[in-house]
Picture 1 (cartoon, rainbow, N blue to C red):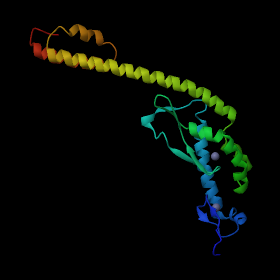
Picture 2 (picture 1 turned 135 degrees about the vertical axis):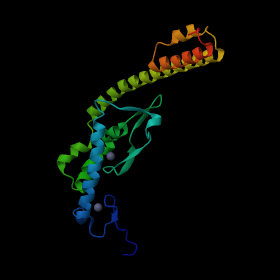
Picture 3 (picture 1 turned 30 degrees about the vertical axis):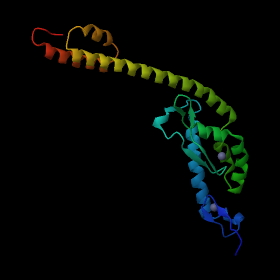
Picture 4 (picture 1 turned 45 degrees about the vertical axis):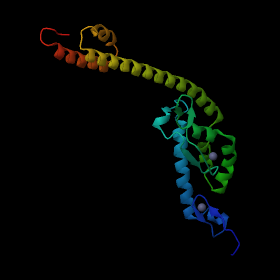
Amino acid sequence: MEGVELPFCELCQRTVFDSRRGHVYTSCHRKAVTRITNRFLAKVTEARQCISSPRVARLEDVTAYAMFWCPVCSCEAPRHSTAANRAVLLAAGILEHCAGAKHRRSLPRFCHEHRVAKELKDNFVVDESDYHKYLEAAVLALSEFERKCKDEIMQENRENQLRENIKEIIIQGSTKPVVVLAKHVTSTAAAAAAAATAATTLNSRLGPGRRF
Ligand SMILES: [Zn+2]
Ligand SMILES: [Zn+2]
């Protein structure tokens, strides 16, 4: 056997000593095929759920550059897609890969080679029309995500400004900034609570008879 390179089965992760043709019928190979295709199918099924309602996350909240293994093409591909403004489209990479030409080309060979049931074939690909639908929905989801982010930033800025105002009032210890305080205490319960704290502090400084 010296000098002869034995084939290696990627699905079983073992060297094939018997004939390659015979190997695909062995129980260990059949089990590996079932395990791997089920796992892959679960990923594709989950990704498909995003077609009508794309999921967007912040870059810092997910493993944005995670990869997934495609047994059909025998390659790794990005799981998600990053977009502008630190947004990540979850599972977009899986959808893109499974709708792609390379994946479609590899599928018949994979199914034939590993004797995957014909009826399962369609489950391993994403229709091109579905992928286009997804892209359209993703554009809307991204703009909604950006709008929410802007609102959050504006709200945060308002709260920071309010905190600064309250700090100023406490430091000055005078009744003059009360007008400023009242002007800002309109938005959130948090702001109202912060203002109440500031008022209590002021009252304790002003003493009896000079309530704020
Ligand atoms: Zn095998
Ligand atoms: Zn593939």
